[in-house]
Image (cartoon, rainbow, N blue to C red):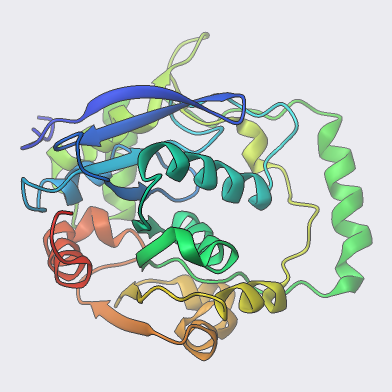
Length: 294
């Protein structure tokens, strides 16, 4: 059984900075939509669970980032400044006359938070679902990481593979035990596609798996966060392993120290993928924080 959306999405494609991007839309077209931004190795599709819990009058739009889902791959690699520029171009098309309301998960939340400091006039309200900073990489790590990156460029990256959608759905349920079977099947079908040699491959450019040669610079992130003027909310999963994996530097403390108007909420019985596991509770907080449909 597959999850049946209450409000089925409309699929569109639009050009952002020379690449074709897939966009899912819900609700009326005459309102500036709430912008939904997915995390690493994900697609726009899982926001369906959240949208189904939002008011019918709301207009929403979820983007597949470059190199993920149905969007074009980037031949030159993947860099955070490109994501900021893609988001900037998206808002010029979908919310050209008013500051946007944005909900981002994980990588999407981090992108949205930093962008809100780069272009504070373009963001009206912001919700980050487990989207925080990245652990610091000391300068001494640069030679090794750059050498690793150069080595990886010599070998074509490989897709991860799965036998079929049932196997992938079972894998997702093993990682996220609260997922109902129908939800897991929906996620499996949105995340993978048939591979030329049989089985399934993930719907993402395998180049995303290359090591990033650019070291994380938390001080630069914080400088951007200090310029955020929009009210912001950080929502965490009570059972998330994010801080355990990366350390306190990625927790709410650094964000709270830099963002002058930050609300922090925690959702019980949820891990890092809290919009998969507790979409109703996430929707309740989003509606309360963002306000009405326009």
